[in-house]
Image (cartoon, rainbow, N blue to C red; front, side, top):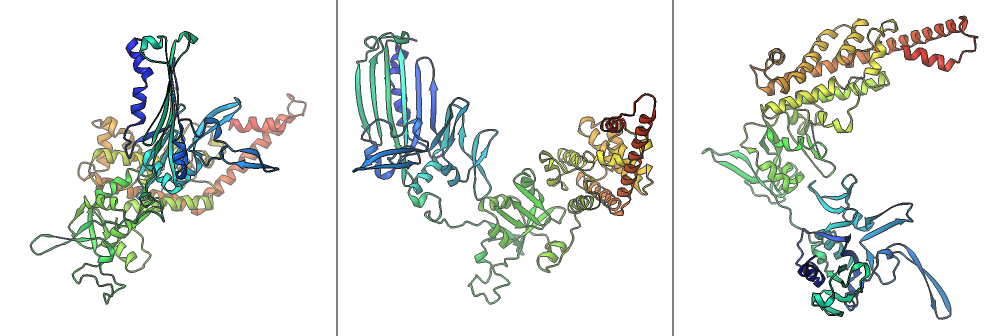
Length: 602
């Protein structure tokens, strides 16, 4: 390295400037680091110091806890003439606690470092093990990365650290060591051997220059050791109940009506400012002109697309929208083009950030709520939905339950975790975008065709015909199983599944091909909106599911499989007898091997 470069490194100016910087609220603070290269070594190790001990901690530049002192241990000392033995949770008796804990296993397993358990539990952090990140989920359901763990460094967001410090009544000590070496001499670099100990407000450090006398070809070194103290937040700003201040909830206003001049009438969704049926005498003193809590507010149907796009977080059900167990709101999703919700529910059940999302899609009302929603919400009636997506999902659930009850296995295999979104996001699209239509066709095919339980359905094939159909799969296998057993009405549903499969296969990849045009004509794509086309497809899919339910509940499927199993067992037994009686064996047949051989032939 050049003389100027080495002089700059050994001066430690850059390191000192970095440690003295103004820290940002959302900064990812390095709380652990172990960096080493040929001429440089840098360590950072953050610990928690009781607020009452900060003055003492800043009286010296040495560390208050070393890397190896963060594990439970014991101590023996004399108290008068008595020997005392004590347990130390963190290996020291000065009240200091580690934020990062080192785990070592005597070189028999890999060492690693982990976040303090108390810190993880305090913020209820989710550990994404694939990325080795810690994620915080707020009350609205938003996810933010709070900590990142890498082999040589760990970072935690300053905001969460200071919140933790506030309740712990502790300060953060950023302990650091920075060592630099050079092949140049101290004289050549312009430095003088010796120590300098300094303090600047909440930072204390000692810098030493020395002569290495040629060790590892190096002539000079610089060593910087110290600590930077970070203060906690005031408890009232910690966000932690019951110490934090309670912020007043905010509410968005929505369009509730249109006056005689065509002007929009807008009103707050704050439930406390709305009339309620439970308060007919207006004991709460609500404004006489205030609308009812049960005023229907209308939104474009695209308002739900956000939630369909994240099925791992949100669930859109028949009359219900949920974000895990954080929040949920009843919705009227039984219309073609709009979604409705009660004005009071918008304010009571949605976080403010979600209210602002819904506000973007707010439109003047064009009518009331649907008959289904009215009957459920105001008539307390158990009413089935007539929406295609709702009836399909209900039939799907009914088939799964019937299969388990009457067959002991699923006619349609449960979707894998990675594929569950195909069912959760199945709906009539909000627009006529071809991309959305193609994706929904793919999802439906995944649910109805790719999930057929081929192994169990194959048992419906008579034993003597199984060899001929051993290579058949999917729809062809299903058709053979139903046809060979003379199940009535199967042709219509097999034909639908084939058309659906062809629509999936010939869709985006062959948009202008003959196959697609033929299938598109069958579904009347050219003469209808894609939304109406998919609604009709869903209705046909529900009919197919209902047909499967009739088959399962009828009892014949179980009878056929039991009969085929008996015939297969009889056939195996007869072949075993034949093997035992033939002159090719001494009658000492290994029955297990014989059964395995005969069964695999089938």
